Length: 347
Ligand code: TXA
Ligand code: MG
Image (cartoon, rainbow, N blue to C red):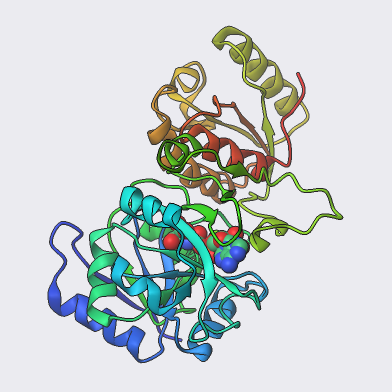
């Protein structure tokens, strides 16, 4: 398949280009587009065939449901039922934005998209290019992250091109994703809301609006049925081994990084650090991916997936990363790092 690359300016989306992308979607084609969280691969959610093509393009198991993207809140009742007061409050507070809510689906959303579940995840993104395209096509657009299954989600156009060139009909070239981690997923279809995936909208932000919610930690025992089907697949895993150091003060962490790095290098391993700049400046630049200032968690989040991809591009075998406080977006950063690492290392 020949992939068309089309650049759209996020400050001022060119109408004729937006229209062309919308026409591709309406014709059942696959279009990778930017959102504020990560880039997504979009397809018309009302076409089973288009949705099936997403699974092929990503190499994704078809029992892992897709999120459906809408332009406006008014479209929601066309596709879902039982919209609770709490869901309305969350929508008012965080939509458009990096929040996905799960509802009971209507018949027009096919089980092909929801992995056979009777619920569907809905998101209204705020990215100007995503919004313009969704408005122009006036369709619900199913869109998972635009990576090949098992790779980190793409936060830059270059990542999408690397994974999907020749696999989708169009890739929209735009700037890097603002949030850099996938949306917060909250299940609003049951008696009590449950966060299935932490993201840019933290538990505390949600609780400030609707009161206490549960958090599915994702550390599921084998016999448990995962609540977000995506959790059962290995995610965000670079080819090398990530050693995630436990949270500690600067001196302890620095000492440990130096010790572990030396040991790995003595074993002849190609080694690198995935760390905030306070640590990066203590080591040679060519073995560090600098995520940004330690206190600036938003910046760390924005650079994390680029850092994971950097490790693969450079065929790093041993990767040493530091932990972050699990508050605000730190929750989501640690969730992704733990998944990538498998667990936190012991000192
Ligand atoms: O930020 C995002 O959410 C990005 C952008 C493109 O919008 N999309 C994204 O989609 O990350 P995806 O498919 O890579 O991740 C969706 C996650 C998966 O873990 C999936 O299992 C879960 O949401 N999910 C989707 N529908 C669900 C449902 N009905 N019930 C439970 N979990 C669901
Ligand atoms: Mg994904």
